[in-house]
Length: 285
Image 1 (cartoon, helix red, strand yellow):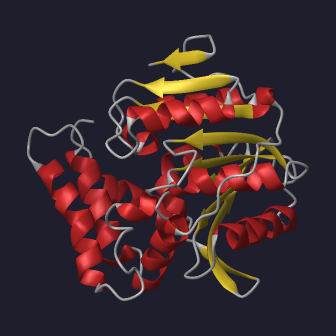
Image 2 (cartoon, helix red, strand yellow; image 1 turned 90 degrees about the horizontal axis):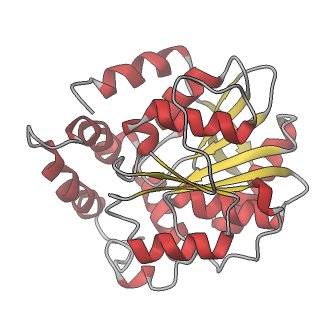
Image 3 (cartoon, one colour; image 1 turned 120 degrees about the horizontal axis):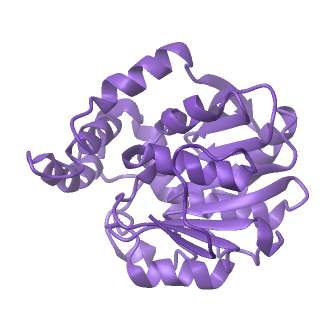
């Protein structure tokens, strides 16, 4: 990644474009909306991210697309959140939106597009999984997420990320950004909810969108989504195009922002930028 102060970069964006709060069915969602014309894009983060984790894509695309990025509430389940997002999308007048979800957000995005195909115009399932079976057997999901001390839950995330902070680690700048999320930028009740939602998530319904509106994004060095999990996702979705990073971590929208924005341009039908993905059903960069 090189030397970048990602916390400062994101901070500048957030100072100009703070989250607003939207109460939907009794749940408090954080929302960043930008853009007034063009195709509609919904961005759903993973466990360690708020709406502004996509700040680089939002800034790059907001003059050409209508963007709705969200932060999760502190209660509810996958079906509840999909219902809430349906209302948020409709209220924003963004029917037909392409929905990109990463990690936890990717599971939610798959559920949303499968159950609301008339509302959603496309799916980008990014660095995510097709099934949560067995998730409740591995930490932190194997813990009692309601009563395990929050410091213990946070320590589990910190243990993995602090190892990335060595001077020669390619994702050391990313580690600092994510540690800020772990250490309180994501409040306790919201963090517990994110973990509990994935632990208790239902199986995904069959996808209802046409194949030509289904895309996947994966990273060869994703330490959280194993190669068999990646293969299962592609087998389940049969995407019209599979975008694949050789090296980008579990968070390619942060580590490879230009390439990530470029794939979104392709998905949304916008003019290509400086980064061009190879043609074909599988694009590797």
